[in-house]
Length: 345
Image (cartoon, rainbow, N blue to C red; front, top):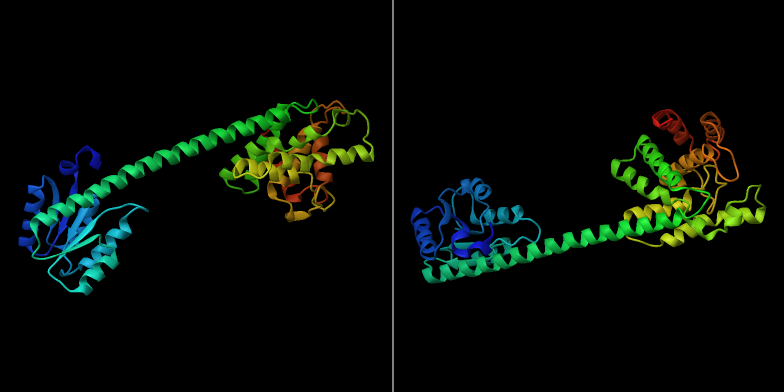
């Protein structure tokens, strides 16, 4: 319940004491203080059912009871609370020993009052503890609103950053936004075929279009050269992997972190002859291996300034010819068997 809407009338109170006279006394004290939502029982075995039905704002219970002791109930309440939830538990006991007080407070009780108790004091302590709960509830609501706002703003910034990088990527004339999005779509499909979960597959779909972001650091004269590249020119092209990773940089964003991995590893080769690190086999992150297959297939089957589009059969023949050399052989097989049949055209 919302204690801001009426501390006295709105608070739910649960009283547990095996002595009916004690229950009646506590209930009369609470009613004199304006409480009307009071549930009680003289059988502690009914506590859990009443607690679940009421979800009280405060619990008052006896310490020594048959069947289930007060300490056990205190611990049970603490175990039912959400993290950081404050729900006061007041122990009302005829046991005046210091040990009883220590045991109750150690178990998680909020307060300890001895019988016979001062009825005015009981009412005041209940009110004080409920006011503390009201403050906790208000702060918790504000904290949740702040957390939601932070998550919303973070997501908006991530989307803005991702879209800015995509626009930068698509400025290059040798590639189109259609190419990058096709690679993202195929990479997600291939990832799922390889057994990754939907969450990771969705991240791959969003991150893969940035695989060649680093080409912003490679001159157009090299990227768009119609003829064969010289050794020096190819070395320039190779730098796009590390340039892309540097542009994305260190980040706490899952999608951008994955984009960084893909940008840096999608030209590594299964046999270790790729770049920039010469990684081999499974040492190449799976998203990088997935994008490598999809990127090459899409590049081969679409026209570029320096080449005609290959047929699907020709492109598949190239992938199969390079399986276990350039490409992860299992991924090539999955692409041909599972992904290719689902592609349009």
